[in-house]
Image (cartoon, rainbow, N blue to C red; front, side):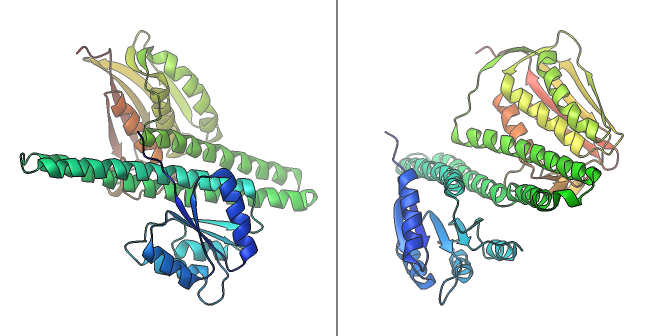
Amino acid sequence: MEAKFKPDILIVDDIENNIFTLRTLIEAHFDANLIEATSGEQVLRIINERSVDLVLMDVMMPGMDGFETARLIKNRPKTSNIPIIFISAFDPTQKLLEKGIAAGGYDYLTKPIDDNQLVYRLKMYLRFIKHEFMMNLHLRELNLKLIEEIEDRKATELSLYISQSELKAANASKDKFFSIIAHDLKNPFNGIIGLTSLLLEDYDSFPPAEQKEFIRDIKTTAENTFRLLQNLLEWSQTQTGKIHFEPEQLMVASITDEIVDLVKTSAGNKNIVIESNIPPGISLFADRNMIQTVIRNLLLNAVKFTRSGGRIELSARNAGRMVEIAVTDNGIGIGPETFNKLFCIDCNVVSYGTEGEQGTGLGLILCKEFVEKNSGTIRVESEVGKGSTFTISIPETAKIN
């Protein structure tokens, strides 16, 4: 029987009506233990005496404000990983947002609270906190069993090491998830909100060409953010074990043609040519959705890091009992400081495309997980200034046990 997860949420505000409003909203949507505090000093006493999974923190409080309270929470090893969401007044200059991030906050919401926005944010955070809870519970049970057996077999030390590695990977996954939510997803929306506000307030003051440029920027930002969100959701499913795996015999051309057509739009915006050289008759055994996700990410990465007027080639060939699919570009290449971190979940990799497009590295991490799920491998060859080739190798047919 699966253990029930009931998160402990600490609501902090010096105004009782605000606490009542938050409590009522959360109780209507979540099964959680709600704790209340009206000052920073009270917060520190509470987290010292009991566990807390998430903190909703007002910024402006008498005495110790929310930022100082957050810094003290983050400075304690026991509480440093507690996600903190700040709630305060509208912040047009984003100075409070910057102070909140500097103080260790994961998110920042403005008053009056948008109910749907708060519920949406809490669902995202609590979903991943639950995943960590279940993972830690599983690992604790596993470690207890290993301790009982260690007197009989020293070999259990290896299993314990594996368990600790899984816990480290789970924590790294959580940090990556929160980092993307707090920064990489929020920043594009700030840009979209800023541009739409300009158009809404001063639409008639801009010439038609500039209006169209604003709309084009909004569309590009929205598309890039959608792709990031798509990767984020797919990767989150792999971490919780909820993604379906249904391998089948597939013709390579049938799974690449629609992806190439999709990516050609992004490539065309940069005047980049994509050539698909997939010989007829080549087939592999894999999950269609996973392999299409891998190829889509590799092609979009190639577009991102290739200059205007460049060229990208998608090719495939038989290699023994495997099928190799390669994406080759003549872009900017990958430097040695980044090369060894490409598929590392706990490495902080921030990269920028030829037109300033920011990357989180999540797409390549997802590629590696999906390729390995299909009993394959992925490798990279790159030279700075000359381009890169990403090659995936997938079994040609199902393995016979």
